[in-house]
Image (cartoon, rainbow, N blue to C red; front, side, top):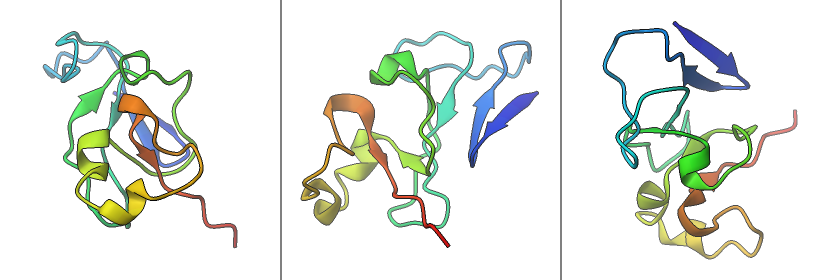
Amino acid sequence: SSIEYDDFIVEDDDDDDGEICCLCKDGGDMIVCDSGDHEPSGCGRNFHVSCIDRLQVPDGDWICSDCAKTKPDLLEKTDDTIVGNQGYEFPIDKK
């Protein structure tokens, strides 16, 4: 099963689907590199929130740092949306 948090799906450890974190190679609750409707698209790899130095699941769509590096204009942001291996959190459109 999975738990959905504001456009993110966190994989539930109770499933026996073989999902593992691409960094620590362990199972558990994870987020997926998925950009939603944004470019670049995500790679689909799984990450524990703690393995990417975050305290919580990002509110917006998110891609890992490797995918963020494929779009240089994302790296030119002056805010702290990209820090180390935390990846890039797309701004939330306020409609």
